[in-house]
Image 1 (cartoon, rainbow, N blue to C red):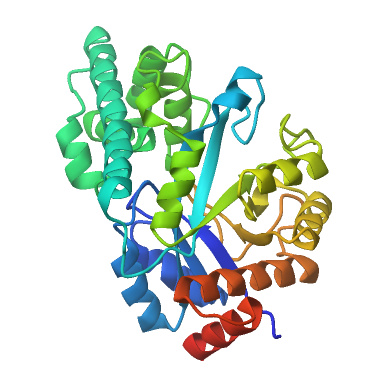
Image 2 (spheres, rainbow, N blue to C red):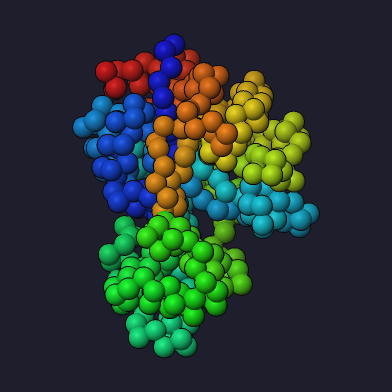
Length: 368
């Protein structure tokens, strides 16, 4: 089996993304030689049609995925940090290889719509608090939530959209860098650390200073925004997908969460919960840890895929790399990733037989 490069986890403007559109993401993938690409937006299937059509125009193989933030009450009660290092019990889950055309309907479709609406509403409440802060410092402008939705989103609103809208409003309001920097210091209560012409860094800093816990515009998430893990798994399966656990693995200090530190115990728990597919965002991890974790999990029978997210303002390559190797993935990791993508592709197409072989056949036919 020839190895084809894969990026199985890419956010688009249908949630929040570094890309200005689907075409930019796929043009970059094609230019970098990444032939298998997975859309993976929060709470949204809305980008599937455009993803499918634009992949077809570029001879790329599309994977159809989704991402949720769920809650495991048992882990929460035990104070167990899973794959959110700051919130015990809170658990990110992806669905891989959902059906396209979309088949989700009934109660599961209603649940997805409800959690998406609550997520949007929470950002709306943040916008209200942000405007109160702007009024308090006599900014002379406000952020219109309706305009943010209309001009910066494709229906899903994230706090990163507010940070972007704020940066754009400040750039329009103040004609000099000195005036903008002075305003930011008053607004945030501290000087801006980032270079003001580094848009991604400025937005990240505004988000951290104003919209995260402790910030003037922070609004705690309502429990309604987090469906139980079992409910999320049911939605994914009803949509034709494979429930998938996104690993954090080693952080910059080499630390692991409570749930992931004992890999054998973690794998056994995932299996007991009906999760037999996992993924990694490769820039988070060292090559050694990624090879160790991904290799072990593949040997344990898990489907393993990798991605880059691109769900921040910072633009990075589509071709995957690890935290300590900017040149790309090792051959072992490329093989694991492609094997996993083949399994997902076969599942997505509903093809029986050996999933890796059938998925490889489908992919190679598409990208030829």
